[in-house]
Image (cartoon, rainbow, N blue to C red; front, top):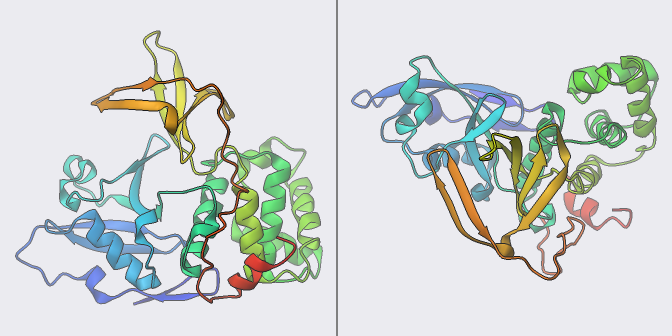
Amino acid sequence: MSISSSEESEYYISPSLLSSTMTMDTIRRCQMKLLDDRKLDLSVTNKQTVTDLINEISRQYHLSETEYFGIYYEENDERMWLPSDKKMLDQEIFKRDSSPPVLYFAVRFVFKSFLWLQNATTVMLFFLSTRYSIYRGMIDTNDNTLFQLAGLVVQAVAGDYTNDEAAANIIKRVCVLPKRVVDRNISRRYCEDQIINHYKGCRDFARGLCVVKYLMLAENLPSYGSHYFLVRNKNNVYAYLGISFVGISVYNYHDRETPIKIYYWRQLENLYYRDRKFSLEVHDLETTHFLSSSSIPTNASTPETDDKLIDAIHDPTT
């Protein structure tokens, strides 16, 4: 069985993913959604761990940096990540529901610069994952930045601008304009025009350069790399905790763009979590500095040759 991504790459899913040969084991069905928008109907057994399944899917992508990826399901608009060392059929979602669950293969761990990544395939999957998160509102952004990012996606998918009608059709096809953004603007046509203006400015950008510019812009968004959890304190006041490579941020329930407080990892000790209770000890520092995602490590290795990503990373305009 083969699948083709919307980004013009082809991947092959081995029969072992769909295998039903292990008849002596307990077998459950599930649907797995991949980062290229493809869906797989899978059989999992009581012997398989989450790591086993991640490794099997990663082999189909020729993905070596598996440590950044995970599998989750959605519940009340939150991502519920499956513990990687736990067997698939011991996961809560399989225990409570007899119907085949919907699972997602996605980037789980994000750090301050994608330039740390060793493999161009990993970079591309980070790009697809970030696109999905921004479109779904899991990464918050202002409208102008979203229009810029959308213009880069259209250039990466379709190449140089030809006319407004073709561009508008591409915008609809590649899912870069969320309904929530349209609702808070004058009209859909206005939003499309803004994206097209940015798209025109991307002329002559190679696909790899679009990917690099997209990720560099996305990394500067305040909520990039954050996993949000709805919490409440002893006074029954609701808020969001955002956990990222920077630390733990506290957000107002109605605003996930500007944190009320950031607790950097070097300030934190004795993190405690059990059942529904979460607590930690904070040691105030005299000065704290936000780790900018634009800080590029001096010893970062470049990705392997693929789709001109190396050229894009070293392009003087990036």
